[in-house]
Length: 258
Length: 258
Image (tube, rainbow over all chains, first blue to last red; front, side, top):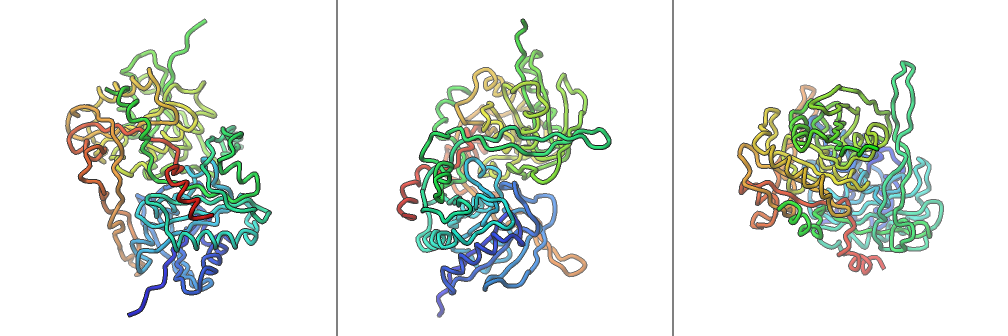
């Protein structure tokens, strides 16, 4: 009788070619050579896909060989498609952990709402698998993931060995261009996006619009948020949940509707 | 000096042609002839789009004329794109309410995670606008929305006149084929989707996969959930929030990572 190796599923939303995906694979490999790693990532970039799923079209899987001892595959869909299809048809057993990223760009504040990286994490959490999303606050394809790599490995190892609270996942954001000063567990800053669309006129005279704008932190003075700790040079670690019922509002809404 | 009429923005994820969108427009019009209504819906069907946004491509707006005194427009993107672009470039002032639907199909249980109908609602909620999503538990394009129309009008009127608690929106699901027995304010049933992909073989020999499966209610015995009340013939009204920080887990995660 043999003891099964731990199995880790890795995905992202920047697609199979993203340097951040390979950086995260290296970080998981650094935990142990004994971990079985399966990477199942979107075939093409899927930023801003949230928890979108492909409902009206077929999905295809492609084998992309091996990287640092990890099986690499693509799915022709979204990050959540990758997790769902990996669990149903690719991995040999339920993974012990799902990690997503390292995203090229921040997923702090309310970005979790739109993030495909975090959509994949919440999907795994919903079916009971410990799951962590990692994002670097730098959009460049040439972003340097090496400065935070030992901390990413440490966080992932702790989750792999100890699990996470029930129905809870982690949203990890990493300050770019520095060696982070440490890890701060905190809540997400509330905010929204403002001045959102650049407007253009096509040669035909038809107007068109392109998403732009910036995150407005509605809690710029709060010192217990991810935005604050990132600004101070720390990695932010926000526990997140797929649960969206507003339990605090049940009584008020009963008054309103009854 | 004139008093401004109330302004209601309507959207959905089934697209501008969906009968449920027109049914919802009729329900809002039934509140009052004095309401200004603007419908901004996806040009094509966008089910399962969650809070996805279009980040790497332009968006186009099309004017589709008037329906029952409402301005009708399309956006070439997702439900959240519709809300964002409507607020930035279409409506003349901040709407007093955003309603989404009526969706052709249930958004009870954990479907809020994947629902474009509810993605639009959560987007409006994030920027402080009272918002309600309506879904009928029947996927057919010929679903009968008339049986619940007076109740949809009543719920929307109450929200328009009284607002909703801070950072809270409503997820309304309506049982199909009956006159609902009433409205029950409740929480969403926890669950997940199971047996998810049908597998096929293309003529070339290449396998492909198509999403299927069914919702597994992990709380089938609970009598305070939306799934329960829908099964009893009631409309379910779940207060929901865009807030996803798991506050209950902050201490445990601090232990884990420090």
